[in-house]
Length: 526
Ligand code: HEM
Image 1 (cartoon, rainbow, N blue to C red):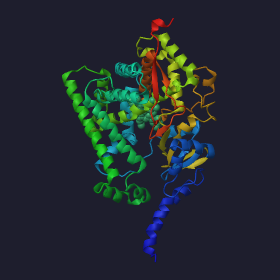
Image 2 (cartoon, rainbow, N blue to C red):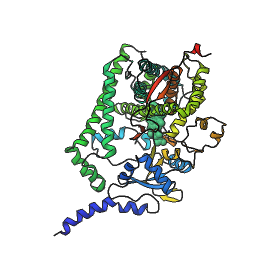
Image 3 (cartoon, rainbow, N blue to C red):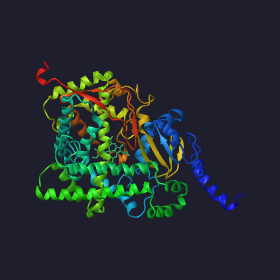
Image 4 (cartoon, rainbow, N blue to C red):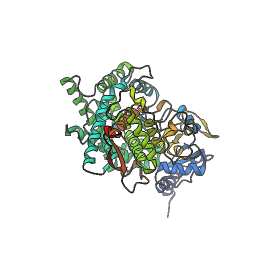
């Protein structure tokens, strides 16, 4: 016989799994029916990922819909105007419930991506001059200081491609570019050369940092994103019991949570080791590698020091880690996707225009910072690549006040999302979105005139827009120029469509497999 006492917890669990309050609050907004406890996650998996599911839902329900990851409801928007409204009016990213407690929770707060309030303004203000400087901005041109490192790193990549080409080997260009972008941003953030590229024979130790760092990032991301701990379901089901569940998890961690905690510790240790190494290097030789980066670290610490009211020390150091996390994969994905698209036979004309632009500049010359502006077609190729495959397919915000979104009221505190991938590939906003047309980003062309005004968001928008966007475009341009001065690339068979893997970013699940075709030397051109 079932007693009242045993029924009530069962009923509680059932009711929490249905989230009746959320359903009631969002009842006026369309969206897919939610499954008990899992929300829409099973359907997301069936449709090929959350970003693909958003595309499907936008077609079915229109530009505003509710979707649920596990069973947290997110009000998604998929129109240029609404995306702009969400991103310009709200500055906080969504914070999903997590199991972290005590010191671990402090670490989480330090990682900036979720930062809010005054701390956000101070930190963002301190970072801004490094990244938004340049000729068009009043701040000192620190960006220019990164040119040397970017060029050196791109040339190591070219050496490595050359080696593969000589041996007639197929290569995963996505993986190789990833090694380069880690080197660039790791060195930028910590002032210590990461030595991640094959052709670089220097210290094994630093490349070991990267392996450990990336593994730690994976260990943290996977369980956090997909709730591998046995404590996560009760945390979500019984939010009022969160403090107790967190304490229990902290004292009796299971395997999933232990991996997260160990991953955090690895990151903290590596950051400390890197900084110690950096100090040693500086002491030995003031002016060695990456001068601009040395400047960055020093000024980083100065501007974010006690005077500016941001806790110094480990916090500042962890910000450097956040930079690596935000910068390496996004840039690698953008480059690899663009190279993939340019290597498709149907885009041979677009590739020919690129090589012509590069040849007009010179097949041997290294561009200066100013000369990077002489490559509008290259920039358009990259921007169009990020339209078809935006490295960050979904953006999130928390509503800071009650809002109207396309006629639907949402309450303060509601999680909001922007379906960037879907919007970038929607024929309602882009003519023939499946076509790779860099012309869309060349002023005055009919394709450019047909482009939506605000519908392009690979770097987000508003106060939380990607801080590294100029850095990323600069790095991508130098890399492409150095590669295409020497080679073009042929796609290996079986890659007509790319299988995509989704974490916070989207990337090529099986890499981008190409063969490099050496271009005839410049004196054979005529
Ligand atoms: C092609 C390469 C890149 C892409 C596509 C990209 C994309 C993005 C996106 C979509 C966001 C979120 C924006 C929003 O919520 O509105 C973001 C944030 C951020 N990105 Fe990037 N990013 C790239 C490269 C970089 C680089 C090279 C750096 C640093 C050197 C960087 C540092 C950051 C930081 C620190 C944030 C957080 C900004 C904040 O919360 O205030 N990113 N990025």
